[in-house]
Length: 302
Image (tube, rainbow, N blue to C red; front, side, top):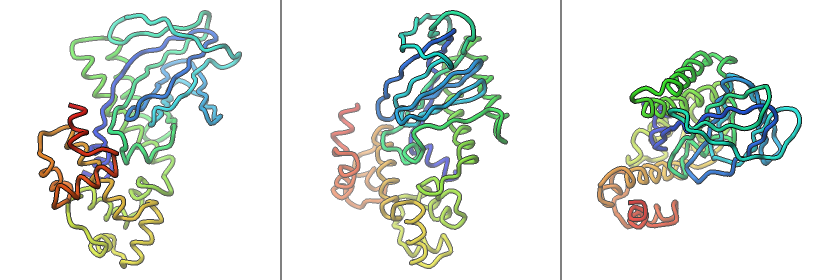
């Protein structure tokens, strides 16, 4: 797996297609912030609308564009033109997806809406901006995004056997394509995703993600990057915004949380798998990262 694969895997990311919106005329719909570990996306199939963010940013969305809010932040969706008060939609069960309807008149907006679910504190999701917009037409990956959106729409419309499983699986794939477009168009200058585009630092970052339990030293990581120890420390910290040790600890803790939630391994075994020789030292680091001991957290979610 490459670094991006590893980050997606660490996040335990899964997608779901949740509803369809058919809005007419003038309308507005408030979206409250979602719980930690939940992102939201809107795919405009036809028509257009406007997204207003709490920071004052206004995004115009048209057919073929996808808006993603990685942290599930609050936002207002509304029709373009005259402003009206936010309303509660009329929800109807019309097949695979519930259909939300608002407004009367002409100028229909047809939109698919869904969510991405991931581990709170995800390195990957934390490295993304509060919102991002991608197009199915304006970049080299547009054809792939458009084809996937078309398949999502066909499955939602057809409501055939297995459609629920398929649309959720396609939603997970959609996230990866959106992430590719974002990295292609807006290569981050700093942060953990910026390490991916640095030819030398990416080799050390890949090694840490491939084997976080390994007893890495600055010298061994610098050797992977073909740099001196001092140069590696300086450049890595400058690009990532964290020292190699701090970032490695975050990777280890994210892996530990994933193992706690998805396996029956003992705490001692999990500690060993993420690079700690004693359960006590592992528990101390985990509590610093997540505010609770691993055993208590596992019992809370079981």
